[in-house]
Length: 460
Image (cartoon, rainbow, N blue to C red; front, side, top):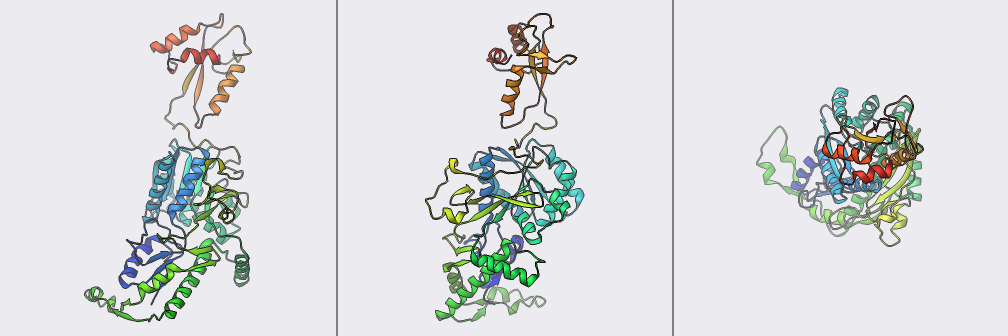
């Protein structure tokens, strides 16, 4: 054995990479995205996909684009999940947002509906309605089923999924209608692969082979390019005079475990030379330019941003490390100057949970939050500005009420409030008396700042 392709799981890849490094065998993964694979920690590990570092940066820039400040993360509690959330936390902090709550799902209990229910009930009681879901596909589908049951897929909620959801969509499209109904309005990322003639021809051949029974997701394309990468590198290695030879590993022999037959394991003498050839490759594959930078990351990391709508999805934009958020494919922007200006970030119209195109606030007062009590004068004159609705104690109409409600609606977070009448209805109340009562703490109305008198006079 001179090279290993895989494994698909980041958790398994961590274990296998230790063996690969010991035996000097290049381990090339097309789907292990964990951020903590580094040249010094895993010297013989190479990935042909993108690190979650970039995926979490893309999510943080979406959060920043819409102006949300607090994010709840729901994730699988293993190395893949935890490390991804570490990257998300760092990316959010750089953009003056934060992870306000982290909800972990045990990988052993993740398919237990009651376990998911307990996690999401805690999430539903939080202030944040902006949720990032970083799990495996099987757990993710169950999360949305439970979230629908709990009423967490309606107006006001925001759900952003890492690329596990796009794997489901691309591999099994069209999804059953009841599954799609549970995901309406969700945003998801997908590893970007350019739309080229070579890719279209390959997808067509794939459909002919499978009869259309199995879709082709981005990782399938990465796997295909990975095979060609190793083939080219091995061809170059042999052309350079490299030999396929092995030597004994004294560390392995010292274990002397007859049941595992570790004595059969050998160090690949040409492992470092083959690894160098892999890292030096540069060619156009089905996934775009396959080339590595000095940190062994693929150049030009990029993602599609998809919006689950109706029986399928809409592509609402792209993210790339080169240009940020854009409605133009990244490969077009690579030909121009790099531009990460916030003024040039752009996405198409998004249909959010609940079917609205209005940006959700992403934040509410928790269930235990208290309503603000807003003092409203019960006037006998100028009732076009303020008047109490007949037969009601706390419902008011008028121009000043409209101005107040419009101002509250412009806030980046919801403010629950209750109107409280002030005055006896026989004469106009004295504003100074109202402000003095608030300042002295006599009134049950919520206190304001030193400018309270101005606020009341301006609004009412």
